[in-house]
Length: 171
View (tube, rainbow, N blue to C red):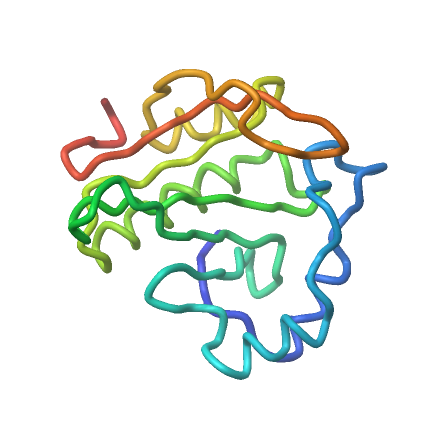
């Protein structure tokens, strides 16, 4: 069964084991933070703050990935903030529905925990698997963000998705 939970200190090595651009074309955004940086963030706040966080995607006691979120402001009042999510799964665990389950659980957790109306996600325009996963998780496709992301040495288009408090997974 897939669940979300906090990382243990021992499991921080997971971040060093993630595939690089040769194995995963959607993974290279530049150089990753050092192991010391991850450990310092974990020691300070266990990778969760008021403005964002990272949780482990757990499959029967093993970390198979992580989910992250960060605040995106859409206006001056804090009630205009949204939470933008992302997911990383180890390649051998993709295509089994674990990402859909994890993203559904994350959206539910964030809407139950934070005073936001909107959880959003974006993915590369060519990443059909993630587009299907977000749609199965109850997210609505909103449109294309042209040239929005610098990755792998070039600007890439993204598909934007959202899930609002008033949405249900069956919409």
